[in-house]
Image (cartoon, rainbow, N blue to C red; front, side, top):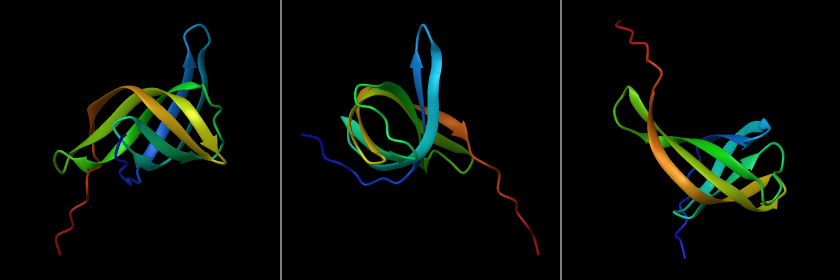
Length: 106
């Protein structure tokens, strides 16, 4: 049993097959996440059994200029309306540059 954490974060997904290349991509928002899976909402429902790659903009950052993205691969295990549950096969955190904030001195 995995404890689920309510984390709302932007997510991008890609469905690829080796022989066919990129089949579909889209975006959405996470609903919750655990060490075994992630539930996210998207504009179009995904079919159970589909293997995909997710990139989640992690809400914590390393510094003011360096953020984290959680990359994972997995399989859709169930879908309800526009929510898809993905069982995680592999994951890794990668760094990303955060947008520069404009400093205005008055």
